[in-house]
Image 1 (cartoon, rainbow, N blue to C red):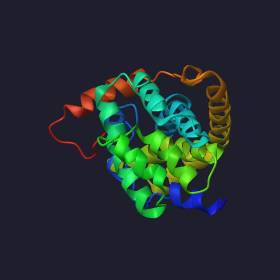
Image 2: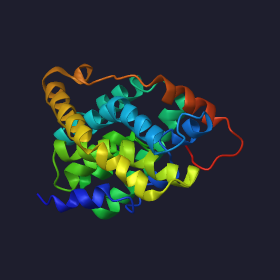
Image 3: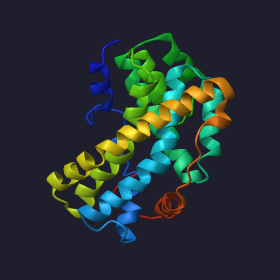
Image 4: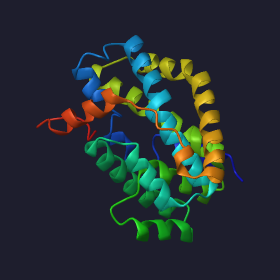
Length: 224
């Protein structure tokens, strides 16, 4: 196993399509919930412990070898917003394209055949991590970091926030990311024994509501 593969997978320049998505930050900026570095940190903290935890657990479970179809159904059940489900599948489809070119293994080809419209992004992320020689903990870290890195990067563009401040937000949240990744790995272990019902279903209603409003905007900077 090469842990350096995690750096490739988590690199913002990896062509997985995340740059086009704000992780709910665009809607939160318009609603006034993100105004500066402090409110960005609060938003990212909430996202990490809800949607981020769910994504990290799904990714860890996929990396551990749980059935992708069962995990995809579990992801659907944990994503009430149709707009967010569609965004997750678009991101999954783009990530799978990049993954198949970077780590060509039969499992990724099988995933593409099974989900022509795209599987949920965390499931693709977990299987990609395994294809790269990484484990469930690595997949959890990648998903958890992505859940806060995307909004932080987007807010730099949306508000003209100082990128040094955005990086400071991510650094301050690092210990909490450690905790979320550890919890996600434990959930994945439980799911191996008990099934997908053991995975977390932490709710994030404002993200869901914001996503539906955002999808109806005639003009927007980000896809979600």
